Image: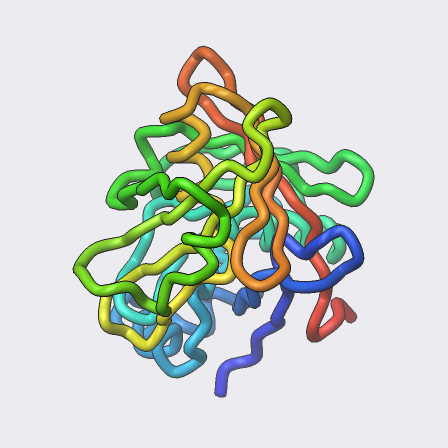
Length: 223
């Protein structure tokens, strides 16, 4: 097994929840898309990120079945880890483009563009109870982000994410790209409670960019 670190991204206010992320810090140890795809499938996380150049922010993201040009939870997690290692800068460079990143207290932020968060359909439900009652995954095909207002005036949302791509991930605990898509669709900043116990923060900008942030916690702690 190739050496990798695991962190939990978008942990809740008391450190609970968070979506596990595999990070291969020496991306050069796994050259080529095929080998990376095979390792991501073997590890079985919703996403695995390969660091090709820490100081310049070069990263490559895979689900168990596909390569992604942009994804929120891997970029927030790897930004935090690179800074914990003392080699992270202010920009990440996944295939989609340059992604600014910064910390505010315990929250790690990235900024992406709404058009990068494609392929995820959002569906509003009338109540939080309806969202929580959904099976994992619900019937149907394609990436589904099911959500309901917890407190519309305050911008608080209850959400669950279902990739439905047949690769063993029945439900995604916390999904930054889907949060970007929903924020852009609603045109407002949000606090999203997703999965079992995760929290995602977003900020909407009129220029088509969205900030997405949250707490990251080590599972295999940085050395």
